[in-house]
Amino acid sequence: MEKVVGVGGVFFRARDPQGLARWYEEHLGITGGEAIWSQAAGPTVFAPFKADSDYFPADKQWMMNFRVGDLDALLAQLRAAGIDAETRAEWDDPQVGRFARIHDPEGNPIELWEPAAGP
Image 1 (cartoon, rainbow, N blue to C red):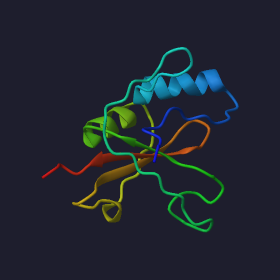
Image 2: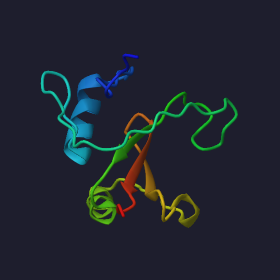
Image 3: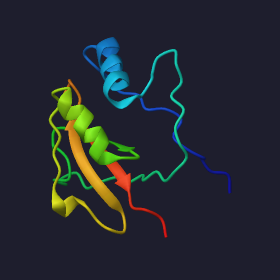
């Protein structure tokens, strides 16, 4: 059976598309528009949630999850830039990894994930 081999793009509406693209590039290193963002290979989770899930805000239909190499270093950078980040011990799992949450300037939730070290 033929299947998809990866995420080819993420498209969503924004009040200020250019400003939001700059924010993602400046704070998370994600390029957009004319530039193509080349990602490191790794796991991608595709998981629809129940409509009444409280895993992310009920008024949002989606939440991006980005893999990171060093969660603590990225959180320090974000906080130094005045971006609030939330961590909770119950989100972390030694088998899966560590997690944090931020929001972009338009209020979209973003989950940051440092995968657990492999065996």
